[in-house]
Image 1 (cartoon, protein in one colour):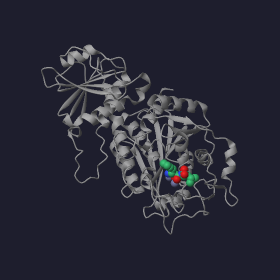
Image 2 (cartoon, helix red, strand yellow):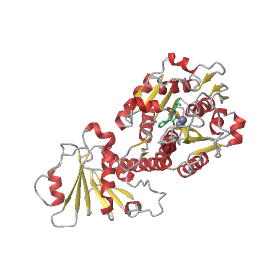
Image 3 (cartoon, protein in one colour):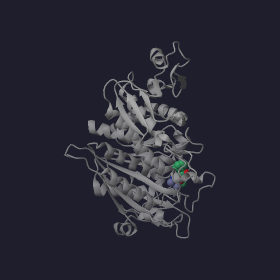
Image 4 (cartoon, helix red, strand yellow):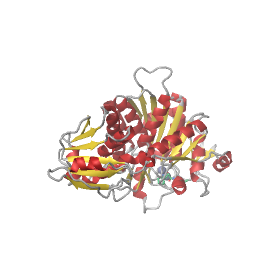
Length: 481
Ligand code: BES
Ligand code: ZN
Ligand code: ZN
């Protein structure tokens, strides 16, 4: 699909008229259909109505964008419309955005582009392939003045999101740690940033012992993926942000094995890594003036004779020893190494880690928000606001020192699980805190409930692309500071 910014109407068989709730312009509808009168359409979120021109072949779709508060998900109304109706679309569509604010122009491009996402890529008779997928299909967005940049932002965001959605939805046998590394390497080459991968021998040399311990039961060796994007014309004022991601390609729980019922969904346990990949790729696509470093610790948490056992004591990159009480609390182990690796080697001004870390965060916030932890109130306020704007929400939970006792081990420096079914997201965050070397601007986002879940676009749970839009806005906040 190809996007065009146009400033005067052009002949098109398909015309899309998006409206905010109770702001429907019936004259504009009549102009497009040649019919007078007011259709029963108020513009509520995701409402769709198909109309026909009285004498030509033109089809007119009304799509509801809901209220102001729905702005962060306006793209989903466009995606939904395209998803539902695209089989009837042939060569081009025209979206009239002349009466809408800038954010909706980006949302139109983002949503239509996202309709190209195909989850059934492993089907042998792929019926989902359609015309939208071809370069010949044109999407013209009609605005008062040229808005190529806003449209491009939507398009590039969609590409970055779809790339990582495909990764999160990919099955565990295909997406091994090495596959993630190769994916990142190829994205880096295409979009002009650097990617360096520490493989097994280098992990041994560098002492990333916690990451290696998690991966030791798998036939697919663990890796540490290092990404760096440096903008052109970088200077002392360019902000530097470090992004750390949990990249467990499949989480069986290890010897503390998970129940089998929903275990297949644990292919999504690299949602944090995916968000880091997507955000860095998007920054490179848009050539944002920000210096980014990404560290993804990737391993498969498998069941095997070689697997780490409950009660084992392991080392870590930081030098601290860890008693592994529960092998299913593996995310914090790989993140421990990734966080101290980031701080020691890159010293970023700001550091955010993202991880599908605990079932407890899902019990607490459901699928409505990621759990946020930080000591930095300014960062907390900024990211909360951006979360509300994008509707990729975060909600802050505390890092009280009382929870440190839960990490006490008699035999090692600390243990990875308290053994109590209480405040699990907080104790996990507290564990990570022990590895950030007192970094003042660190934030941990537990995205277990939001990275992967129920979707209008699939019958089973699937990837949401969570984090790309949030982190893009976070980067913009740092750039504009
Ligand atoms: N990957 C899981 C967390 C998770 C749960 C992600 C549900 C997505 C949906 C993580 O590794 C895990 O198993 N955490 C345990 C920790 C516990 C053993 C201390 C949990 O939250 O139950
Ligand atoms: Zn686990
Ligand atoms: Zn996990």
